[in-house]
Image 1 (cartoon, rainbow, N blue to C red):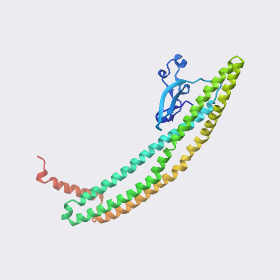
Image 2 (cartoon, rainbow, N blue to C red; image 1 turned 90 degrees about the horizontal axis):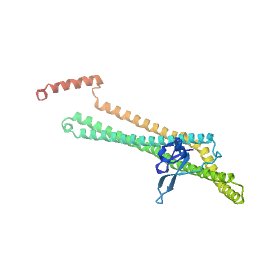
Image 3 (spheres, rainbow, N blue to C red; image 1 turned 135 degrees about the horizontal axis):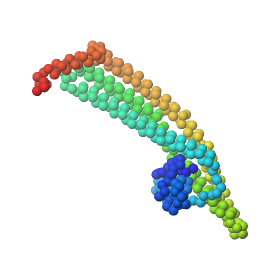
Image 4 (tube, rainbow, N blue to C red; image 1 turned 45 degrees about the vertical axis):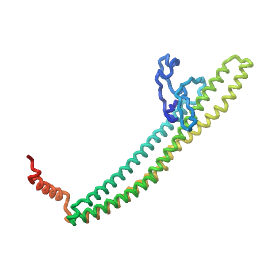
Amino acid sequence: MPLHMASKGKLRGPHRRLSDSSRPGNRKEQRGQPLLISDILLQWEPDVAGGDRNLMIPFKIGQPKKQIVSKTVERDFEREYEKLQKLEDQTKKLHKDMKKSTEADIAMSKAAVKISADLLGNPLCEQDQAFLESMTALDTAMRRMDSFNLEKVNQIQKTVIDPLKKYSGVFPSLNMAVKRREQALQDYKRLQSKAEKYEEKEKTGPNMVKLHQAREELRPVREDFEVKNKQLLDEMPKFYQSRIDYFQPSFEALIRAQVVYFTEMHKIFSELTEQIDQGALTDEQRERENEAKLAELRALSIVADD
C-alpha cells in the first residue's frame, strides 16, 4: 500500500501521488506518468534524543516481477487503515470540542456569579430592602449554580475527556505498526527483486551460490512481512469495532451528568422565581411595565433630545 510518512512519523494513506519534480529522471516521469508512493520509500530515523526525525530522501527500490501482495489484500488494508485514520481525527476533534465546552461552562457560571456579586454591592441595596433581598437571593442562586456546574464539569472530565485522551494515545503505536509493515514490504520487494535477477542469470556456480544467498536473505524478511501484514489485517477491524464499547459508557455518563445538572438548575431557578417574582407578572406584562417606566425616563428634560 502506498503510504505517506507525515511529520512526527505518522503514516497517512491511502494512495497519494507525488509531483513529477519529486523524482527527476525516473522512467515514469519520462513517460509523463505520475509517481505513486509505492515507487519510493521515505527514510525515517529515530532521533537520538528520543523524538522522530523524518528525512524526506527518496531512493529507488527494485520492483520485483512477482506480485508480492495481491491487489485485494492491499485494498483491504488501505480501507481498514483509512477508517482508523478518520477515527483518530474524529476522536481528537471530539476531545478538543469537549474541553472547549467545559471551559465555556466554567466561564459562564463564573461570569454569572460576578454579575450577582456586583449587583449585591450596588448602593441601591443599602437604600431598598426589597432590592437587597432580591439580589441576595440571586447571588445565592448563582453560587449554587456555579457549584453544581463545577461538579458537572469534573464528572465530564473524568468520564469523557480523560477517556478520549487515553484513546487518542493509542494511535501513535498503531501508526508505528503500519510504518513497520510498510518498511518490511519495501525490504521484501528489494530482496525479491534481487533474487529474481540471479534467477535470470546464467546458471554458473558463482551465480547459483549468489542465488542461494539471496533466497536465504529473502526468507526471514518475507516471513517478517507476512506476520506484520496478517497481524494488522486481523487487528485493525477489531480495533475499529471496539470504539463502540469503549465510548458508550462515556456518552452515557455525559448524559447523566447533564440530566443531574439541569434538574438542579430547574429547582434553583424555580425557588429564585418564587422569591423575587412576588407580583407573578407574565413576560408580556413585565415588558409593558418596563416600557412605561422607560417612557417616563425619556420624558425627563435632562434626557430629552435637543
